[in-house]
Length: 81
Image 1: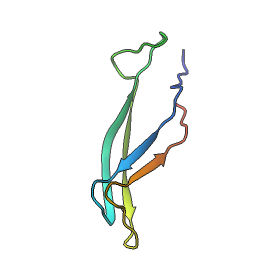
Image 2: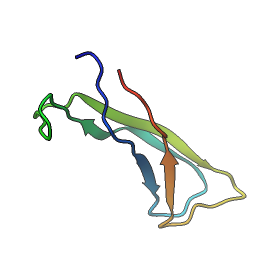
Image 3: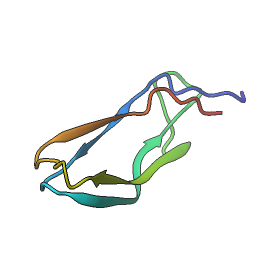
Image 4: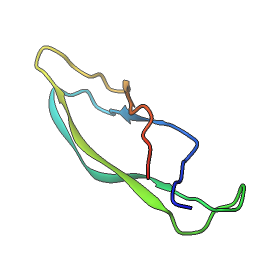
């Protein structure tokens, strides 16, 4: 078998605990492990892949992200081969 699908999609929410203006850098951070198996409703103990995220959030002086505000980032659907 050469093609795998996860059968699912998802999103990432960023939650800020303090209000800020300027830039916050998100270091390279593992956000999930993907497990799989050829057996239905079963998976191995070692992940098939790991997903990492990094980046930055920039808030201009004319705007402020309030503490407790959630920002949802929609990555739509990505196909992995």
